[in-house]
Image (cartoon, rainbow, N blue to C red):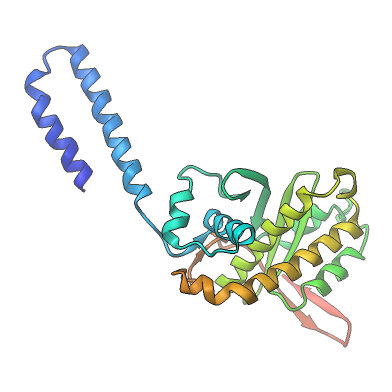
Length: 248
């Protein structure tokens, strides 16, 4: 409320000098600009200890580049107030791709482009079993569509906030990895699956190595603002030794 008090006091001082419409509108504009500036400074002063999409990108990219875990205050100093939530950025400046988390399995299949538009049937069943096997011990499934430069994340039933943070981190690490590959080779499904597997291992190692340091830096990993909507969750029930059915 301090900035509101300041604006009110400033208004009280200049009221006796407002005598014409031009001065009135000029004063109103100046006070509005002062109000917006003070609001901006107030928001910049806020330091949150929970991770959203942008903070996760800043924290992880700095950790990979420098080996240092930034505190919530250090991250807030790099955080942009106006930023598209779906962007995957490396240290706030390099935009790698976009990402959507908590989507349905249908969205994932559309991203993989294995559904026939006429019938909705799958053209290639090989990709799904490989993805399911790859993410068998994880609470999410991820795919990157280089045609649209978009990563799709499906969350499994029971995925908690740490799983969401890991999934977003994996998407960021994968996007960074893909940005360094020759463009004509990214479209190859085997190469993309291999890149997903490599970056999955890198993400697991990152959290295994630095999880305690991240918490010690002041981050509350029990709170997260990544899947901001109630989205879809999927679950797997094992029918036989090597057969699974998907429940939506």
